[in-house]
Image (cartoon, rainbow, N blue to C red):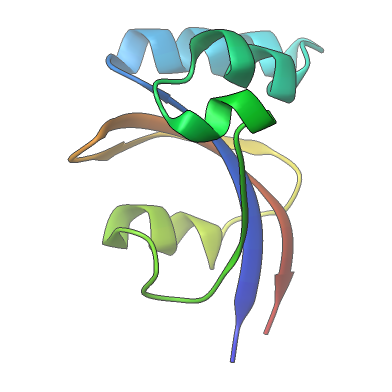
Length: 93
């Protein structure tokens, strides 16, 4: 069964998510920005969500984590919780 590990930053607006993505693409530290800006409790761990399988996260999140490139910021991804910036740190098929 497929498994993935990811970290994310959860914010309230698409604009904030896009701004953070630009900062990361410009060299800012993902974990540092997660600690400073994420509304999710995982922000205190740099946004780290640990390892999980398909179906353990909301559909929109799952679609990105199990299909997009590793090691790059993806988003904004909108869910019922807000807007996510997601980085997939590992994945096994």
